[in-house]
Each structure stands twice: as structure tokens, then as C-alpha cells.
Image 1 (cartoon, rainbow, N blue to C red):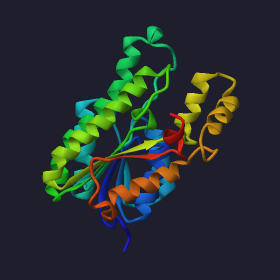
Image 2: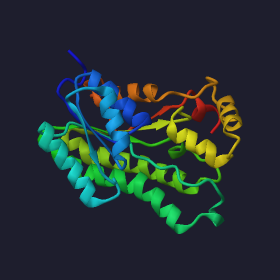
Image 3: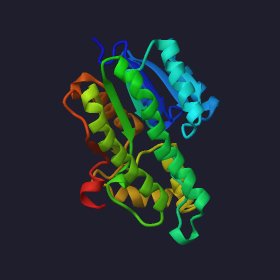
Image 4: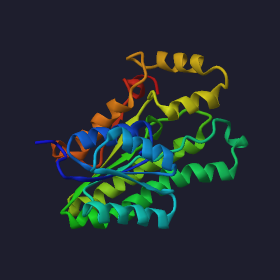
Length: 257
């Protein structure tokens, strides 16, 4: 039997990268999947690429209450409930000293990365409880466990995501809802490509080469490798695991951060 057979999964930030890879793998494992994001075109491409009648999308800004309520309602209406939440939507923000960072830039990073996860959990918890429990996975980052200079908002937001996970694991335990965080390192996807451009416009290849060299495994990870960890945490294989932050970073955080 497939590991997520007939489980209903909501994945925010599902239009590309880790979210799209997770949606693809979960559908292969029998899940009914709702991918959520701000850009309808990206979501449509994800759904079309998966090509499964049990995968659909909902356009939403995860930082808004009304949009969150709507995508939760969409999942319940289309598939009958929710068993798994992958709160994956994220935004890297700017790369510059805190003295040059604007309040508006800081607020945007916090709204997507922290408020978005907080709202997702707030509104999916009742649905998970109706199903007798479930699994919540928050995409944090190795920046939620350590830090680098020049990215104060994102580092702050990802530390907050890990704190939210630990708090919600305690609240979820009596309800049989497990809550864990996944902390990716350098992953070869669209977000990382954007980060390269922000750090050194025109010198993206040099940035990637430098960062890859700091990874003990000497390469970037793939979105599919992160998705496989998400699958473990979503399935019953991790039935005694909650309140944990898992790195998937090729050894970066343990040796260099």
C-alpha cells in the first residue's frame, strides 16, 4: 500500500521548488493534494506536470486571514478533510546590513514566513483534529538554527518558525497532531537562484561555486531530496516523532555554520 494512500495534504508554496517536488512525491504515494500559492500560472504548471485527478490548486496569499480560510475550505470541500499540512511558503527577503533594511522589507519577510505558517496551523488544526490527528511540517531553514550576517529578517523569521513548531508540537500532542520542521540548506531551486542574483548580480555562478564549496558533500541539494524527508514526516513511519527540527543540508550546519 502506498504510504499516503487517500490522505489529504495541503502544501503552501506549492508552485515550484520544494513545494512542487513534495506535491509530486505525495501524489505518487496516494495522497490527495491541494497546492497553494500566490501565482496561478505556477500552480497550474505544477498540477499539469503531476497530471493526477487528485491534485488541484488554490490561489492565496498565505499571510492573509481570509485567503487562509479559503484554501482550508477548498481542501475540505474538494477532498473531505485535511490530514497533513506542509507549510512551505517562504520568502528570502533582501541581503544587506540591518541599517539599510527597511521596516517594510522586514514586515514582508515576517508576514510570509512566520504569519503564514501561524495562520496555516491555526486554521488547519481543527480539521486535523476532526480526522483524529495528523502531521504538520514547517519548512524552516538551516538559518533557523544558526545565522549569517546580511540577512537579518530571514534568519529571524526562520528562528521563529522553529519556535512555532516546538510550541505547536506541545499543543498538538494531546490531539494526536505531530508537528516538525524541516531545515534545508543550499537547495538547487528557484529561490536559491534568486538569492544568487541578490548577493552578486551577474556573478551568480561564482556565488554558487563558493557556497557549494562550503558544503561537506560539495554540492547543492535537490528539492526532491527535501521532499523525501517531508514524506517520512507526513507518513506513519514517523509516528513517534514530534517537536523536532531536521536538517537536510549535506552536513553544512554541523560543520560550518
